[in-house]
Amino acid sequence: MSQSMLQQVRGNEARLYRCSLCGEPAAAELRYARLRLCKKHFIEFINRKVERTLRRVGALRKGVKILVAISGGKDSAVTLAALSDLAKKYGIEVYAIHLRLGFGEFSAKVEERVRSLCNMLGIPCIVVDVAEAVGDPVHILARKARRPACSVCGLVKRYFLNASAIELGADYVALGHNADDIIAYSIKAFLNQDLEALAKFGPVTTSIDDLAVARLRPLYEVYEKEDVLYAILRGLPVVFDKCPFRPEAPMEDTIKEMINKLEDKHPGIKISFLRRLEKRIKLYGELAGSAKPGRCKYCGLISQGDECSFCRLTRRIYGEPRGPKVREYLKQVIQRSFATR
Image (cartoon, rainbow, N blue to C red; front, side, top):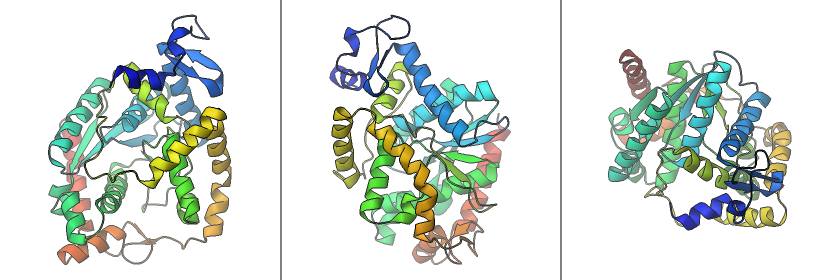
């Protein structure tokens, strides 16, 4: 990361001031909190944000199992690092899972950083090869399905993470969505009047028996600039490169630019928005009138009809649903991962 980018995420004037708590040189200026913080107190500040979010949703219980989805990027790395700190304090069990998507050199670079991160934090890491499990890497699946790569990638990730969490017996799957991401996704959903999607953007979703594990967003109130700085200050091994299949200037990027301009003029508006959104999540779900989830007749996981999206996709591509095969593969991978420890 360039020096200019580091200065930007720190806050333009932070280096000129002292920490509001101890008087050491400030590493960050947080205008919405009226604080300037040194490295130590900034890391503690972010950890407390994560801690408050988990406490609010009831996830700070001894013995709780959290499976953290690790992509190799800053967001998931910060999520894992913060949860690792909290695990020691509260007796939480934290595990990491990385999906090898099959994007050539990019995937190899990402996996190397993921393994380094897990070794640094002492967190068990499960690495799952999508092509080995399904038959093709994600971008080939997308080509065969004649669908955008991001659409198929999202579907595959959701399925693999949920199925892995169920096999592991996890209480939550933790995602690395930061405050900026969630605001962008929720505004896009509102513009599209997709209330069903909007109802899913709280800090936690509801688990459904043995069909779906609850999704947890520990960085719900952590700004994107904050998690960049957190990753740098803690020396977390991450990849800042963008996915080679990411489209240029998606709507979410435009929304982020707009919301950052608002934040500059009205510090704290992001957190205010998210807290109001959280209070209305249940209402949005009721307004959407979502159908009661069912069980896929092939793999036994959550579906909107008698066939889940993943089994439908793979059945159309291969002539047979691959959900049962993937579930058996994940079971074996998870067993091997812990047998070698």
